[in-house]
Amino acid sequence: MKKIDLRSDTKTLPTDAMRKAMYEAELGDDESGEDPTVNSLEELAARMLGKESALLTASGMMSNLLAVLASIERGDEIITGSLSHINEIEKGETVFAGAIIRPVRNEPDGTIELSRIEATIRARNSRGRNVSLLCLENTHNYCDGNVLTADYTAAAADIAHRHGLRVHIDGARIFNAAVALNVPVIELAGPADSVCFCLSKGLSCPVGSLLCGTKAFIADARRWRKILGGQMRQAGIVAAAGMVGLTMMVDRLADDHANARKLALGLSRIPGIRIQPENVRTNI
Image (cartoon, rainbow, N blue to C red):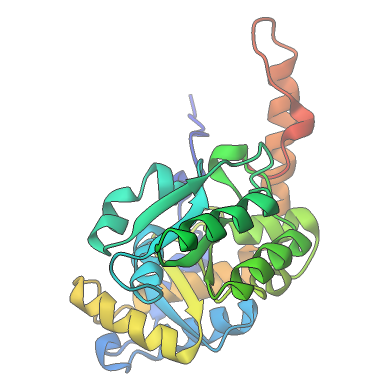
């Protein structure tokens, strides 16, 4: 009997095209900036998300940590959703960065009320706290895979920027959000100062994440990556799969969303199972 593992999109396996690309990848020393395949992937990621530069990392959690390290001073506060992955799972990493997480209640759709963002910034600053970073999550893992619209992201970023905060998007599944909203991913990433996304989820790559931002920001993140021991040598083997993921796998995320809704609908017809198929917008 064939088993289908639906626990997470992290269970995806590389496609035949990825395996072939990995085998044939042109390699070099990435720590020295000499791996042509890594360079091509980073350039493609930056271009797709509308940023100046990008950095290949081992995981989304590493990308988020590097974003925090490159965005704040020790002792600064970070505003993020109460149900965000950064607040729920990554507190240990942010402690290493010297950051203080200031969680604000998430709404069921994954947003944080704009008035709450502004009120939290004002309240913390009035008490002598330096709030320097707003972190959003799109799609939102613990809010049923809901998506943040470009308009919402722009409005939240406008509040943050008016108060001198940077904005980072934990976009592990931001391509899912773009497909669900039928908008270019650049529209969702545009208002943020930095954004990361995973290669190893719906895009089916074996490993990897990309952190995108300004050239200066990525240079600082690259320095922190080395301090953390995250630099890789002939990483083109990993990057080759990423190139296939970004050029061949994004459009088919719509199939994942359709299958998730079909599964939810079927489960809703089984007595004893409570589920709302109409709330399934992506693959969660």
